[in-house]
Amino acid sequence: METAHETLPLEERIRIRAYELYLQRGTQYGSAVGDWLQAEEEFRRASDGRHAVSESEFWRLVQLLSTEIEDAVTIFHTYEELNRSTLEDQVIACALNQDPLFWKVQRYCLQASLFIILGRIFDTAQDARSIHKVVSAMISSPKLFSATELTNRKRVWGFDSDALDQFTAQAWVPSSTAELRILRKRLTTHHKRFEQIYLPIRHAIFAHRLMSNDEAASVFFGATDRREIATMLDFLHDLIDAIQALYENGDEPVLGRRSYDQYNQRIRDGAQRVLRKLATPEN
Image (cartoon, rainbow, N blue to C red; front, side, top):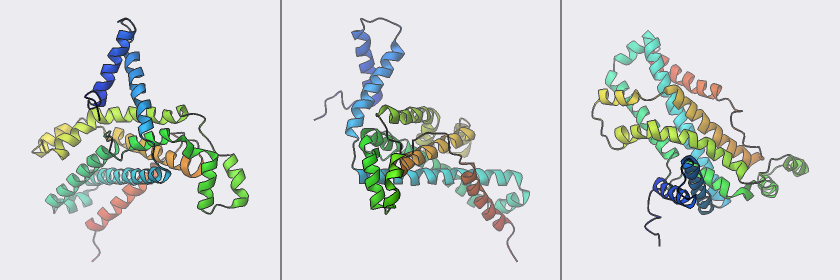
């Protein structure tokens, strides 16, 4: 049975533990940040043990989040191209203005879908299938990335037996969970930004419908930075690809090496082609 303390929100439990550490130091001032970080790390480590999952469950989580992230990327860049084309291409703008209500609905649906999916991706609830759960499962199950486990997977997948020993000998194997925790630290930066700016938008506009008109919503959206959202999505794309590459090929999960410019541009090009077909229909 859970104690009253265990039912408190994580942030409140961290605050209580940080205060305990402060008392243990003899109530000396000057280390508040250090106490908070130590308390946070203690809860993270304790949480890792509870997030151990089977290999099949881990792989299902990775594939699910990969799909969620790709969906969010597609929606965002489709939305961006719709806006850009409307502003910069007079032919497309005139065509869309013939049915403004329809296109207003399309824009709203894209906005709503993006923030709802981002909310699922960053969800910190214990039962959520989120990017946090994937990272926690990865940290709590380092054995999944051992040379032995990689060899077994490759055999099942029909990898050439003659080349298997050489392949796995070159694979990166984490020597400790600390090497995997680096990914969590990078994720935390983006999560905090999401909570500060974008989570309130999801709650206020799309989840609970507190905003009742376009003007109010547009003011709220003024706090967003589309370049920041693009960067956040590229990070998530990079993170899930790095985890997949580690699991499938034993690649060291180093972030920042991949470029998604061409991937994103293909989405925009596809959206533009559709808009142009609508704007200039064949006779």
